[in-house]
Amino acid sequence: MRQRALQAVLLVHAIEQADLAGDVLPLGDRIDATREAVNGRPLPPAGAEINSDAERLLARRANALLARLRIRSPGVDHVLAAAAGPTGFDRTLLLLAFVLGFGLAFVDGGRIDIFAYPLIGLVIWNLIVYLVLIIGTFRSAERGSRAADTVAARELASVRRDGFLRRWLAGAYASRVRARIDALINHSIGFNAPLAPGLRRFAAGWGELGRPLFRERSRRLLHLAAILVAIGLMVGYGLRGLFLRQPAGWGATVFGPTSAHTALLTLYGAGSAFSGVRVPSAQDIQALQWIGPSGGGGAAGPWVYLIACTALIYIVLPRVIAVIITTLSLWRHAATLRTPPTFPGYLASVLRPLSSTPTPAEPPSAESRAPEPPPPEPPPRQPPPAEPRG
Image 1 (cartoon, rainbow, N blue to C red):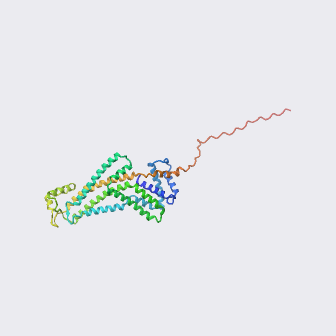
Image 2: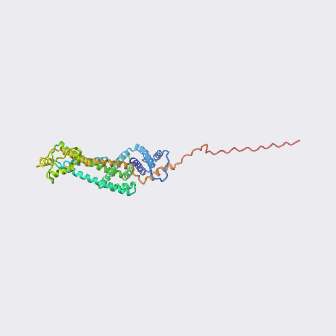
Image 3: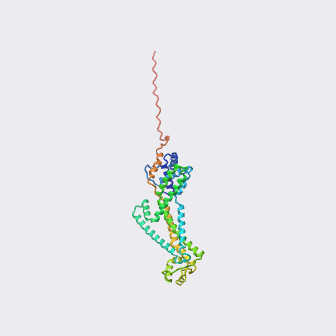
């Protein structure tokens, strides 16, 4: 079932469960909304499973009832919007990721180290993540080929593929959604107390059914955070080299000029081919070695471009591809959410008033009308009695 339709049906179902007396949704409105949803269509048989026709019927009925409910309680739209996902949580995490990358660009003080150790750490970390994701994808495909192709089996394989951070983030998503709905309930309980129990039922039910969406959002959010860490690093180095005019060089390490040139070619080779900025020779690299605490080094412009292109190739572009793949997976999950096991019984209770209402009898047609019996024949006339002869 699609996300919006499932949320609407789940919200109306929760309100009806908590509002047995009809204080929030009058009983007459419920029957009228069911008639509008059916609208002359054949009713599903009693005890039938939830199929696409039943889902559309429940969605039409839920939308009709929500249209009536919005007149008396406009806050239901805010609850549905809160169930869609915590945008404030996303923005906070992405801002922290950018600040982290920007701060990493300043770890080497007032001079730019051409080896860019923060960049090396980020590249290695991302390569490890890519390797883990690839291995997990192949293992998940192997498990999926052995297991039954059901929604539950796919969700179980997806949970097993998640790491600790993604599981924690998915749980944080669910908790944040529940907290936002609880805040809306507490805000509106003073003037609409009968609606609060139904909203709490909805929050609990959606927290369970929306787990596939929370997992996909957490994955996409982590990829976006990795992109912003890299962008923050690029902006930090650009600010230092192009605006603050800090020199770029290298200090005493285990490398000599030749081995340093080889290491820099390994680190910046792809970025150099992409940008056209050449990695200096071993002699030029030797000239960039620091002389004392403030001497030596050279112009930072070429190294800033190499750092930016390397981060773009190894971090930003692969993560953008991962964001696209995760977004497509999120759309697929949003269109194929499983319905709760209580929906067949809910559908039967919704349709029961219609099936038990007697339909008015139609007058029989002319063809089906029974022929009228012919009128009785008059009795035969008796001859008059003969007159006596005189």
